[in-house]
Image (cartoon, rainbow, N blue to C red):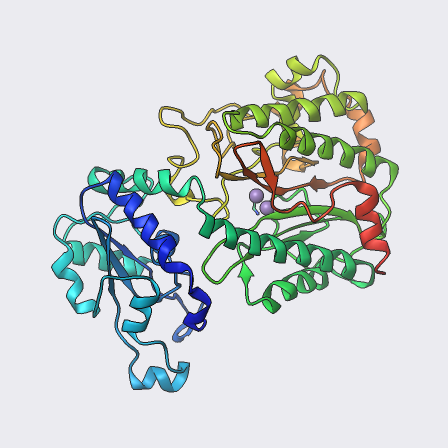
Length: 462
Ligand code: GLY
Ligand code: MN
Ligand code: MN
């Protein structure tokens, strides 16, 4: 953990969060931070990532700690390092010092935690060992957050309502993650002309994130096979004519994330067909961002992106028919099969451990429509929400060669014309947009999206 001096302004933010929680629920809450998972043997561990709900109320990435929140009060439970741990990992701040930094009312060893268990609600953490401890200490089963019931479910709803709209403390962190992510993408563009394989560009991008003492908020996607939506392979050579899709985001030490995608030509020059499709995706991206303001339905933004993409594909001769009919029959989803974005915060898909409880307004459920089933957010937008806008165009063999889809959309796709766009496998353009009282603020706007400037960014640095 960083020196505690970095967290000077934390206390007020955390105090405010727990007071707001206390206005929503009247039972005690215990939140666990979790443990590291081992790789192959206990002393070699994966990097530690504290539970996001713990981070929201405790602010610091403390390992193997718990907090009890009750009527606006905060108690911290953690053990201090053994001398052996200090030998290998260095001295950690003392429990009292940490308690002071986060504004805790009291601090105890973990052995005291069971005394607070009676009637307490919790959120299951992802780490299985910690999850077992949760059940042992609370002396009851603890179900995963997306299917929990009773007071745990009440807690989940309360936390979701707080975390949906970001406070100033969160926004300051989210802006820091966005700034570093923009720099990482510029470094990726700069590295591309001399890179031989995707991994070299990934290294340049993640290098910026690491150099700012941040980590990646999710597994980076840096690929010439953008049609594999969450591609995690980096070995492909970069060849003239390829588009490179980079979806890379930084996460601050306290866990706040950014999530940007850009797609650029490896030579620094789009082909005509690549630019045509790039401009279709960009038109969808811009149209959605233009519409963002409080009260707008996120689902309508998704459908707007679908319409703009369908219109663009009609104009290019790839789709045939009326745009409204094409969207209604999900023809756009052949090429844009995912939702237009999601909530962003402490998790890149914020609060997705709650299933759709955070992303979907109460009473709404996922559609089973081909063009809507991957929509992760279906709520009216409110000031303080941070969402991604990330339309795309992909030629996914598993979709385009599927016999039933092929036959369903036989008449509305000009399959012959489509073959002329074979040099586009995947394009996505993704920005992080804060909903404000007046409209929106694109936190990642410093990274250009227009094709000319993207070309210049790749070429001028070659
Ligand atoms: N980076 C994952 C996503 O954009 O959803
Ligand atoms: Mn995203
Ligand atoms: Mn992304």
